Amino acid sequence: MFTSINTVAVYVSDMERAKKYYTEILGFKLKHDFGNLCFLVSDSERITVYLEAGYEPSPADYKSTHLSFFLTTAKSTKETFDELKSKGVQILDAEPEEVGDGVYVFRFCDPDGNVLEATGH
Image (tube, rainbow, N blue to C red; front, side, top):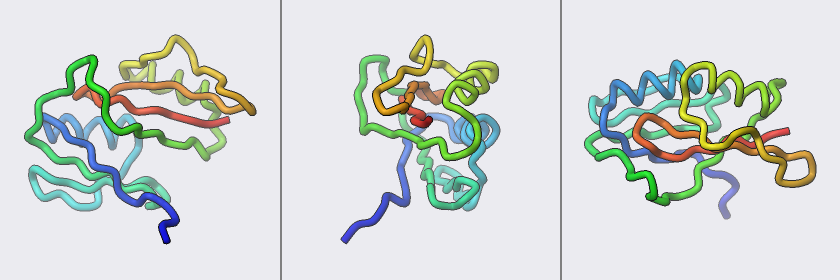
């Protein structure tokens, strides 16, 4: 029936700040911009992030749906961790954590406090 997830909604308070973060920091491309709604796609266009403005930032203890990006490029998880950290991204973990079978994860926040995760080898 279902084979994959195509679109993930992320609610933000400031659309311009969110677009800048998701394009310049995370590398998504702007596909459609409707003012308070926009669609961003990954290089492969297999992931669509739908940004919707008009929401207050998440409180620090707020838990939302788990959103994890799988790293399929030649970059290691550690290299991606270091790159995001050097760009001033709020990283929630001291280092990527091995969760088994050579898989490493780390968590980070977007400007609205939405918690994102990177998973890879």
